[in-house]
Each structure stands twice: as C-alpha cells, then as structure tokens.
Amino acid sequence: MFKKVEKIIEITAWIGTVLLLIKFVPKHRIREAQVIFLFKQVITWLFGLIVVEKNLISYPKRLFFSKTNKSSFTFEYFVYPALCTIFNLYYPEKKNNLIKLLYYFFHSGLITAFELLMLKYTKLIKYKKWTWYWSLSTIWFTYYLSHLYHSWFFKKQIQS
Image (cartoon, rainbow, N blue to C red; front, top):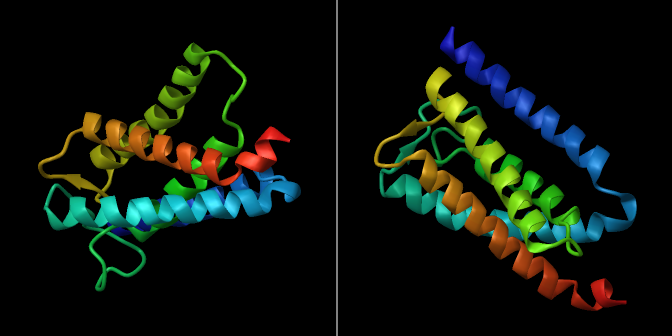
C-alpha cells in the first residue's frame, strides 16, 4: 500500500510541476526561467546533500536514483527549483515590503505544509534531527538567494 501511494505522489508531483511550468512560464521568459531553475538546483544540490549526509532528514522511499543518491531527486532537483522559478518570475518587485514578506511566507509556507503532509502520511520523507521551521527557514533562504541572483543576472533587462 505505502509503495503505491508514494509512487503516485511522486508521479503526480512530476506531472503537476510540468503543467505548472507550461502554464506559468511565458515563452518570452524561458531563458530567465532556465537560469533561475539551474541556480536553484545548485543550491538544493548543496543543501540537500549536506542535510541528508548529516543524517538530519532521510528519504526512505524514492522513485528515482534510490541506490545512488540519498536525497529526493523529485523534490530537491525538480519540484523545488520549478516552484522557485515561478516564485521569481512573479515576484512583486514594485509592491511594498509587507506584500513581499507575505509573498515569501506564502511560497515557503506552502512547500513546508506539503512537506509536513508527506511526513505524516507517507514514507517519502522522515525528519531525524530536523523540524518544520528548519524547512521553512531554508526554503525561505534559498528563495532569497535565488531572487538576489535573478535580480543581479537580469539587471540590465529589468531596468530597461
């Protein structure tokens, strides 16, 4: 039973994420989306491996690369970078600081909430020496880093 549920969740995550990217990445911003996606993958590669190797989190059931990598390929290298791409493409640059703060909370909180649901009802993730607020903080921080990088990388295009 559990194996089937985890498999369905991961396949659904892949399909849903692809559909989100198709829907929310405009054709004229594909280059921008690729840069954000790849930068976020670099960050999650580093943080994801550190967290798993330090035995803070484990991913007992994985659909991809279960014998070669201890982290979750689906979530660390595809879903989070894709959601971060959408986050950056629609970041409310011209809004006040409260709106920007709420935007960060919404995106980081939504991912953390889904992670907590998977923690409670599946074997996709297991906290060992980790808590939900560490997830929220690290997601927030990596989104912040990706936004800084995105702003720097596309500075000329944003100003014109």
